[in-house]
Amino acid sequence: MAAEAPLRFAVIGAGMSGILAAIKLQEAGLDDFTIYEKAERLGGTWRENTYPGIGCDVPSHLYSYSFAPNPEWSHRFSPGDEIQAYFEGVASRYGVEGRIRYGEEVSRCVFERGRWRLETKSGLRDEADVVIAATGVLHHPNLPGIAGLDRFEGALFHSARWDHGVRLDGRRVGIIGTGSTAVQIVSALVDRVAGLSLFQRTAQWIMPQENPVYSDAEKSGFRQHPEQMRQLHGDLSKLFAQGFSNAVVDAGSPQMQMIEDACRANLESSVRDPVLREKLRPSYRAACKRLIISPDFYQAIQKPNAQLVIEGIDRVEGGGVRTRDGRLHELDVLVLATGFRVDRFVRPMHVVGQRGQQLDERWSKRPDAYLSISVPGFPNFFMLNGPNGPVGNFSLIEVAELQMAYILQLVEQLRSGRCRMLSPREESTTRFEADREEAARRTVWSTGCRSWYLDDRGIPAVWPWTFDRFREEMARPKLEAWTLEG
Ligand SMILES: Cc1cc2nc3c(=O)[nH]c(=O)nc-3n(C[C@H](O)[C@H](O)[C@H](O)COP(=O)(O)OP(=O)(O)OC[C@H]3O[C@@H](n4cnc5c(N)ncnc54)[C@H](O)[C@@H]3O)c2cc1C
Image (tube, rainbow, N blue to C red):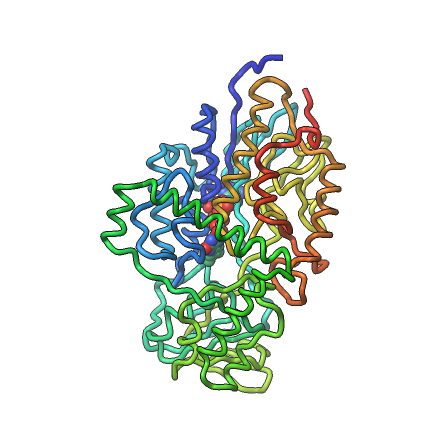
């Protein structure tokens, strides 16, 4: 059977993954696509998170598309606005920026008579043979259920909705949360504010990491010899795969021990006051929660105007935060650095597959997907950075690139006319999930901490094997795991 018309694609989301999908479709000669983006600007995470101190915590020359190295990165770990500008620059240079329909949130995606029918909130309709959902992971802010939040009389916002109209200098600022975001905010704000209170529920291990600038000579070298950046990207990728990704999936490995030793030495050598040091000492293993990388958090939290509050929040009142010991911490600004609802993925989009199957129903307990890419009964619907994929302290760009290369090989089955519909077999998905869960129990994420990696049963909802295994799995689809129809 020959394909009658060129395949039409809908890419949902214009963050790092959606831009990547569009560039790769174009490169493969699959030119009939539209990118739907609900916001008025591309960039996803890097458009939404503009808090003071934001930066990536994997090296910038690794947190770049492999095909678009950037000689202009200012630092080893560059700030958020540079990352946003990078994605905007790449989208424009590769000619995909003009393919984005901004302000269009896809609200429904229904599979009917062999095609996906999409509808946006504004009522726009489209049809596509293939959907690539690049709707993000760390996207829906998680608002804590703390009593009295609505009663606070100062300025209150989530870290991903930073209100730049609020004056911070010389004021009393409270931060709830101790993840990577909170740590970056503390370091950036401590010298600007009158008082900084960090409300800690769980102490965090901090991996020390300097963040040097790239000199003009280094940048010029990169410009003249782009192969140096490619080399650096490759070297960093290997380093992260071997040194970190492989360590976390084997809690007893020597690499894991090295990470733990580095974190412990950082705490011992950086925090002078023994009482504060114990407050900052986690009671679980390093990297059980997402490891925090910071050159200066311990220095910041020891400044005289900084205060680490571990008493637990009882409620928020008009004037500040009341802790369980009865004390009121008076504040002008309260920041919720409380992370994201990480189990949402393509939701709240309403997705209906074959035989009226609803994704909401299938995912009512928790999301699943074969290899984190696709769900049985939802043909030609592929996700980038979907459920249970690799997350951790490495580049999600690399993850998305590998996933996209895998998806394009599946699409080739459609383009060549071998079939019209592709979805993973139910048995493959069940087996994958069972193996994944079993392996996840042996990872460092299962060693006894509360973290956003854990699902409702306490099982890490992540890729639990080495990064090399992920690479191998993504290199070539095993078609026997898929149903090819039509
Ligand atoms: C503060 C912070 C720091 C991070 N640091 C790192 C790091 O150092 N290294 C790393 O690898 N990763 C990091 N991440 C993870 C980061 O999310 C990914 O690296 C990457 O940016 C994800 O890109 P994405 O395109 O998959 O998703 P997103 O960037 O979330 O983009 C999704 C896009 O889809 C749009 N969208 C969603 N639903 C719809 C819909 N129904 N219709 C239309 N549009 C829709 C959204 O508006 C958004 O623009 C960080 C995340 C955060 C929050």
